[in-house]
Length: 439
Image (cartoon, rainbow, N blue to C red; front, side, top):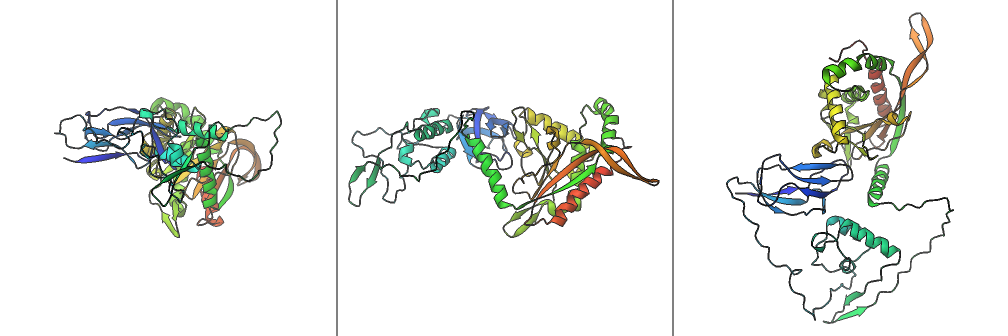
């Protein structure tokens, strides 16, 4: 008989928390290994979380609507299949459940201005927001909660912060503990803030307050630029052979394989080959150490119906042929748009490719996804006049051209390596065999 904890899994690069949407199992239910137990939402994807163990669900630690950090326990499972489900034991009465005495002393704030511990439960996300906004534990205890059993949700604390900034919330009283066994209530003085220069907006401007998700995205982008000194190299590639091959084979591949052929599998196949040629691009930095990854796991940016982007990962991409890559790309893209990706399909990427050409952009300067050290943007394919070299001499012809934009971390990737890598990707694309058959 063993009791194991089910933890909140990591569901993508830089995803640090998830919100419990719905429990698919209840206490006492038997669970098979890899069977879905609950649904979790992040800022990138909604997905079902399977159990890593078979057994009986004996305790639920995270309620519906609760935000849980990655790695924190969300449930306990009894792994013995012979154990019959029983009702959960009644938890001992906590201080928060004990009757309130009329003359009980108020919560005390220590002399060093550090708040004393509260008997009320707060999720890590709520505590993080309170810390960022300078809200003490005593003040947090005054926030009205709309969650289960009166818990303060993310929406509650954000609404409180908004009202406080708007002057709709009165300053709380602070109780200070003196050296003698006596508490003295002192009204807090208004905080004097530095006067900021007045900003004037015309009537033609809309002022939009960033939501927390946008603040997190902004912070991650700033962190990446701060951590990695970015350099971007550009290469223009002639992909006429690829365009002609796709036009000639798309219909037959659709009929035989049931998949729509796009340029993405061909591009990713070339990137995987180039990463084998330049393994230092497939790495990360840990202090003064370079961690070169042996697995080539390609992340591909997929646009969702909501307008957001998600980056599913193709594991061991270098072991796939062109047909296998096409099937994998179609499958991941389809399930990404349907919010049916599994958590491990969003993690452990070693290199990322973004197709900005789908938005009509010809080139860009992409920001690296930490802790990776490089990222590639693929521009739009454009017809333009180009020089064609032939044994009889050079000619001018209409060719299908595209730009590849390669951003890399200059701490470990110098211009020679970063430029050589993107040039190698372009070489593989230009040497594409237009006579090959995918099926």
